[in-house]
Length: 210
Image (cartoon, rainbow, N blue to C red; front, side, top):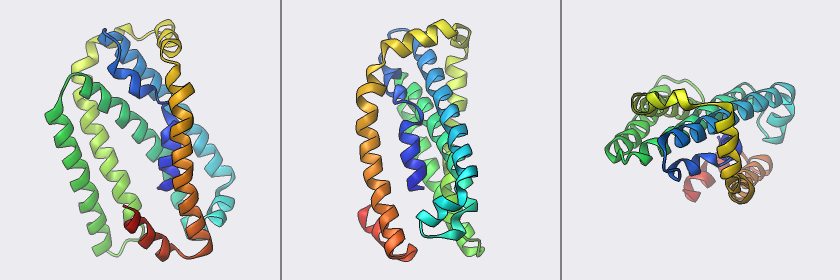
């Protein structure tokens, strides 16, 4: 999940932060679409990396059993990117009630899934719980976004996407390196703890860090 979070930071190019800025909703939709396109490309690339270097990555993490679960990284990255874009689109319209309900729904779904898989004796319930919670939250957000912004989808055009990408290029140029550096610090610490100690120790460290 640390790896997924690290990749998800760069998956949108940080363009989702620019959704709040344009005066026109049509420009905001083009930015969100750009963000999702970049996310899809990064997700596909991460899937390719996981497929080719699956064994090496699991060895680096010090846990061979996690090899199969690495394939959830591209899924998590894609859902996170869509979630972030939809989150800012809802925030743009000041749907604060929707934002609050979504946060509660995601936490409740994640916790319920974690507990359910734990009681059922199914391993890696924390990973599945996070994916299920993120998926439900993303679906809830997306439904609201589609209902609100559907009429602006006809304005989504390649020239428009290119134009907003250039207009707000400072987000990937200035904000992205900082976010990636912070994410690299976190995933680096987790990787070192898992490599030189144990997964149990990593779990205790992660809980203490939070």
